[in-house]
Length: 308
Image 1 (tube, rainbow, N blue to C red):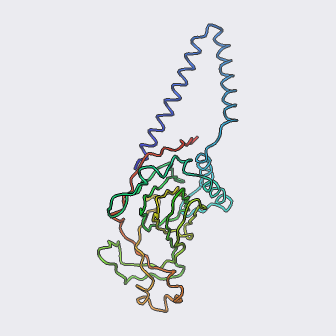
Image 2 (cartoon, rainbow, N blue to C red; image 1 turned 180 degrees about the horizontal axis):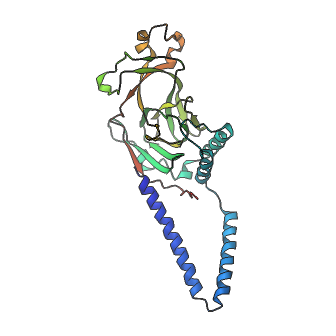
Image 3 (tube, rainbow, N blue to C red; image 1 turned 120 degrees about the vertical axis):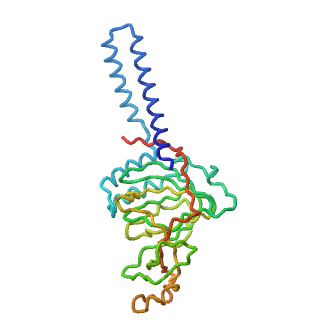
């Protein structure tokens, strides 16, 4: 939601500015009483000098630097792509330096306000950019807002908490663990199928801004995660490549069950976890998108990205 609106509005703004500047230049040239060709040549020469001077003094905004870096880092991104270590470090450093004001955000904005009691607070998404190689956007969560447990198939994701405190619980699939096809979830939880799969907890803690950028990878780093807003908070996400049903990168939601719920059904010969480590494992089961998950699009009002 909101993508066409953002692209169209911003695109028209810059088109009108360019048109106005061109008309002003033409009117100035027409009003000259000296040699037309010489004035045109002089005007063009001055224009080129001015443009060169502007380029030298132009300050590149942090969001523009991030966009430019993403174009380079994800130029050849496809399902399963992981940037090389130096590129990961480059993007992480750029994200670490971005502050709420750099993207036009303030905790006083209306979509961060506490909401009336309901099943789940509404989450707002600010679309910055998306192409087939990567996407940039901001999730704005009011207090108690939840992005339920979901995956990022074949994707590398950078998440920068801009402000606030958020609880993150993330998982990776347990290596070599079997699925348990006999487990059945309660009907009220609208699971898509009865199969559950063992996953290992990667992160289960609060994160408070300012903090380092979090990174997850196609096969590790906590590819499946859940965000819960302890306070109002905002998260800038960079996904490379982005979700794509056509390319098999579909967002799947999960239910999480304690390890002990189904461990007896698998048999000790299949799954053997020391008692002291059982809290670090859970059974995940695919489910339908939660009915109470409401994510609405809103206009991104931060600095405009120049794509060329």
